[in-house]
Image 1 (cartoon, rainbow, N blue to C red):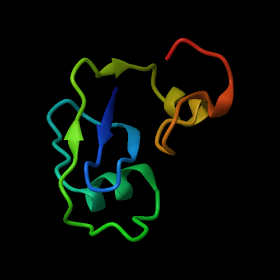
Image 2 (tube, helix red, strand yellow):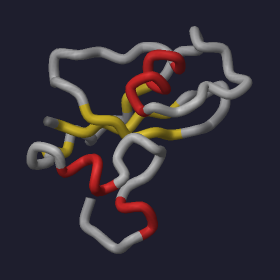
Image 3 (cartoon, helix red, strand yellow):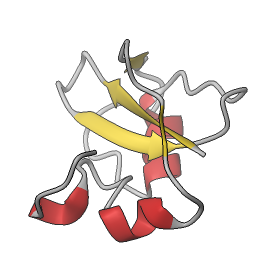
Image 4 (cartoon, helix red, strand yellow):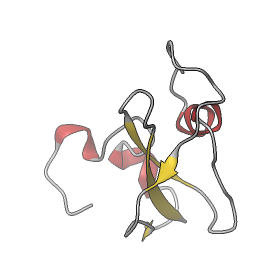
Amino acid sequence: MPTYDYVCPENGRALSVFHAMSERIATWGELCDRASVDVGETDRTSPVERQIGTGHVLPPRSGKSLGIGGGGCCSGQSCNC
């Protein structure tokens, strides 16, 4: 399943999540739900932007071990993602 990087212009935060190519994430609330991250003080309806050039394909189940979804890759370890 491909991973995608999104940024929220309102709060400046970026998150990486994996989802089907046909799925579209449009708001901060949708992104946080997918990434299992608290929305914090940012309005759930704030728009997010998918970053160009993303869409890395990971083997099944590998995203969890790489820390994808929590706002970064590899939990501080060195990798090529």
